[in-house]
Amino acid sequence: MEKLELSHYKELVARLPLLKKEIAKVIVGQQEAIDEILISLLAGGHCLLEGVPGLAKTLMVKTMSEALHMSFKRIQFTPDLMPGDIVGTEILEEDHETGKKFFKFNRGPVFANVVLADEINRTPPKTQAALLEAMQEKTVTYGGTNYELPNPFLIIATQNPIEQAGTYPLPEAQLDRFLLYIKLNYPNEQEELDVLKGTTGSLKPGINRVLADTEIVALQQLTRQVHISDELITRINKLVRATRPEGSPSDFVREWCDWGAGPRAGQALVLCAKARAVLHERFAVIPEDIQTLAYPVLRHRIAMNFRAEAEGITTDQVIDQLLPAVKN
Image (cartoon, rainbow, N blue to C red; front, top):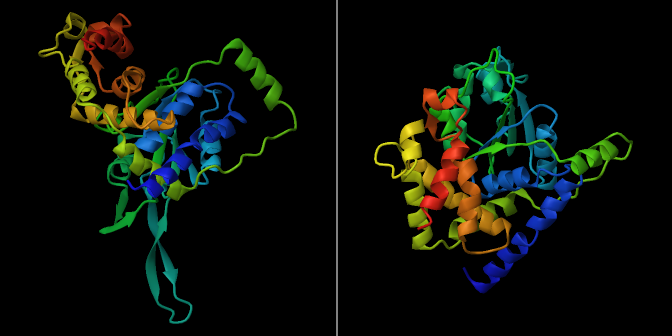
């Protein structure tokens, strides 16, 4: 990068804390989840957001879109939702001058910079699969024609961890395409008190636009240029490989896991570590970036066996065991 380009990048990076401040005008607490959503955006991936009802998941995503000056669409997933309701469908139109009729592709709600797939596990696999091409290729194919999706493009899917009746768990192939699996927790006592005070009156805070879509694309390009040492890449590789029962150095993994993370997990962890460095106004990855992001990157890419599920052993506990082991 030339000096002029570097100064431009630094000016964009300096606006990231302002972006978080704008989101904090509406969203109380949940800083870890907000950081992880922004990391997913900077890394050019998608995220799965899990939390009980009432934790402001939709409001969080909508507020971020406003502060980023990006288009936002929300899709409520239901058992009767069809693929065409997501990607769009052809409609018959008539040319008023010639009287000829023709089919025109009417774009669905997936054609937005930020798409909130609300309660994605409430729709059948056929409809869930409609998101696969969009997530991976950032295009939609209909009638043999490819349609480019907006850039930047971020899908944030949500699911409720409590009520599982009538749901369709996401298949592993689709889970793996989510860069991060983010878990929202209840707010602490003071945060919940602030929510009660701030959301039950008539005052509605205005959200200032901090970054434009083209500037986010520039930050995504910068993210890939962030330095990461060979030593840290080797640590990431060891961590990912240690999640696989066959050949894992951990007895815990061999006892409780059916299978571990694939190479895509290593790519995700490198990219997300770089994105976290940018978010913290750094141009090099440090071990803390890997330590923090190992959980949202790996927790949906490790499959526990039946006995582990019966005894309540979670993937986060597996990561707890592995992180100290790969430091050496």
